[in-house]
Length: 155
Image (cartoon, one colour):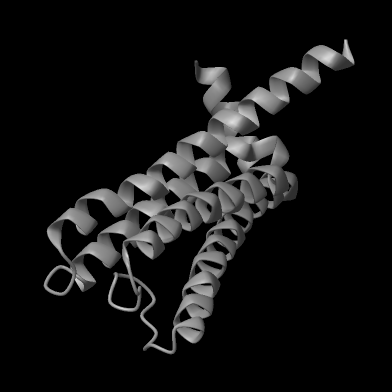
């Protein structure tokens, strides 16, 4: 155990270790930003299409129930794409990138809920975070499945 601590302390001072940690962090931040961009862009398209005010989250700018379902699907896909992008970019340290992007998504869900708690119906506040969490864990499953499949096909 002591040798692991010593090796870790020696390794943490090297520039290679710092490179991989920073790569995982910035990959996660980029993946999170990409997911937000895709979701926000879809909301902009909907609001321009229906000539309504733009809201980055919530259902005020959505014209009907079918558009709410579309936003659920877009939120799932945007989160899935962002997490897959982050984990692929931080390939040797994909677990670290997953932890960072999970934290970012968790903080975003809390922010989104607190910012719209008095404006958005309770059913939406309870169901919308599920799409992001489902996209997050589906991306992790897909990434791990892809890594396992590629490892077995290389043999």
